[in-house]
Structure formats: C-alpha cells, structure tokens
Image (cartoon, rainbow, N blue to C red; front, side, top):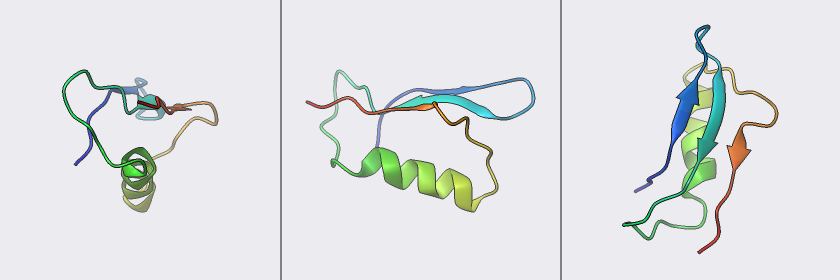
Length: 55
C-alpha cells in the first residue's frame, strides 16, 4: 500500500511524487516501489521529482 501525491506536467512527465499521508502508515520502500512501477510502464520522471517523508 502507498499513499501520497503525484503531480504530472502537461507533457505527461512526473514533476513531483511523494509519500506524504496523514492517515496511512506505509512501508518505508513504498514510494520507491511506486516510482519503479511508473518507470516500468514507461513514465518519464523529473530528476528532482521524488520527495521522501519520514514518519
């Protein structure tokens, strides 16, 4: 399970992705798993898009 925010640009590039959630306690690797899934599906992710929030 993962929870967070995903912001995409008009061209479909992922501009921002994070694991912020006020409700769920997610596994520590859930954000990187989500990013890996996006890449596997062909997503383009901006170099500075990933922000990890620690609980």
